[in-house]
Length: 460
Image 1: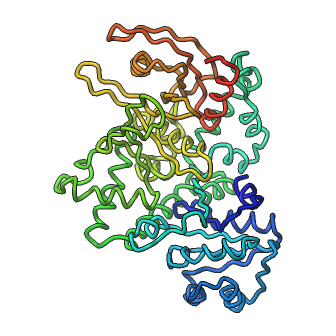
Image 2: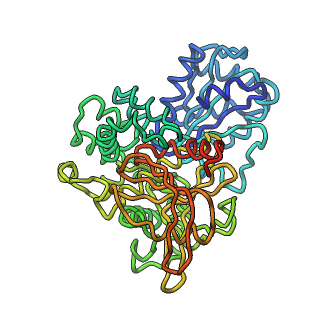
Image 3: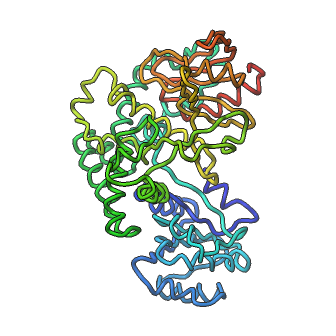
């Protein structure tokens, strides 16, 4: 676990946990802190303004004495108790004071968290204590975590134990359980990974009850607009959020948000929603070589929402209607599949890395093409095609691989895992030769590990 790695480091610094509202930051720190240390002293800066005033000087030991009075508890500095400062975004100046804790009391495990923290970090007047504070990112729960929450620990372990050799041999261990895994994955698509929704589903197994939670979460996210926007921006944020839900899987067009507004007026709303981590950009990259951020087209991007369950709610999709659909991922032109895979690919980044998603688009007249996601696995570029069903043509992927000549590509669909050597002619008369790693949608989180295994065994 990333938190365990942090606390074991000899050069440990105060930790700031970043993430969207309601992804479980506070719950995670409390639960882990009790398990790891046996005691947590928690102070909420939003609830008590006196906490921020306790950081009035640059003496961390004097600050601790003042905090002990407020908390009515001792805060030992020997590492036996975790100090947790919640809602740190209320007083971003406190973050700058953490450098003195790093320098003078490194033995004190100190964790901070807060929603909308990225707004404070971008202010030009705020100076992040570089090299004195560590950051980690928390996303909604992934599918493996969902399985564990549903009491399916063995299935979660089976997914994590799948190897490239197993796939090459026919994936015999998972084949008899494939339909069960796909059924649970469809449930995950409806429930999503927001902890409150997962908890409600775990208790009631009712999608109708989950839809109520999603409605409350969306209302809470929209109520946050008032915290970081004027009234005019509030309306634009609402319009852009609705437009994002309608355009999953497509290039984002500002005109779909509000035909009466210029793109320049709506662009700040997109930026604010991304800062709040309600939405995430998927930027177009030429993907000629790593790093993928090199040469990105900032004017061409797609968007996904924070969570697939919230997407279903934002689209107003009928839960009962979707349950009856032969293949849930085919709903809304496969948007749910592209959303959930983007969401799971963000989980493949290490906790201290800022997750970033990319895709490839070819604009040449008569030979337009697009690959849903392009990932970087170590020093290797691996394109990823998402197919909602078990079948689907790969014309765009063939074009990409013929041009770039990378050895490995991935396909995520509803079929069993497989490994195939592809030789395919493109409509431009070129030939693509590559290894295709095909994984069921529920194994998206395993892609980096399996790609690394293939490289290690010199299969690609």
